[in-house]
Image (tube, rainbow over all chains, first blue to last red; front, side, top):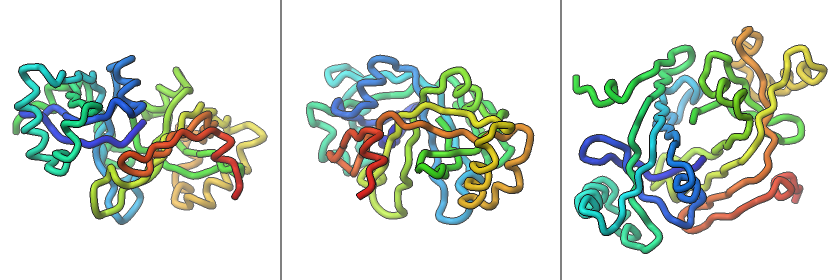
Length: 123
Length: 123
């Protein structure tokens, strides 16, 4: 369980930049099925009353020499400009998370199960 | 991956109060080996530069009718007094996390592996 950088790809899928030196990279290579927790508590009040979203996903590493890499790299840097300092380090890789299911907890007693379709739906 | 209440037992082990209605309780019953992430980012700056601790642990549910329960219940309420509103609900259970290993990330490029002994050491 780790805190990682969070951005999105052009389709809205979670996108991160992680180092081969981290234990979560080793774990995701061994087992790409994973879960992400999104949503920080605010300064005030009980964090359990603040909304958060659990995403059940499959991690997909984006090879640096793949056709998709340049556009995703640019898209990531547009959202996380400070990452330009390390995005080209040999040990850093972009990883996209393909979401299968989501659990929205809107605070005490308000939990909902969402599908990938719910998340992609435009209002 | 969920946000849960965090307290400690008298020996310093992580202690939480979780509901049978939550998916993490179901998951921990099926597989008690788990990981906890401790440490919230502050308001300012990149969250990845702020320290956080990953704990690899085994979840141990405390039966309500066990000899250990009353003291742990009192200890938990002393730290999380608002939980008195629901700690005695039938679906809520105390769970202690027995830590096997910890990974301390003190910010970019500062990662350390700690043992249970390191965590219990008094200065």
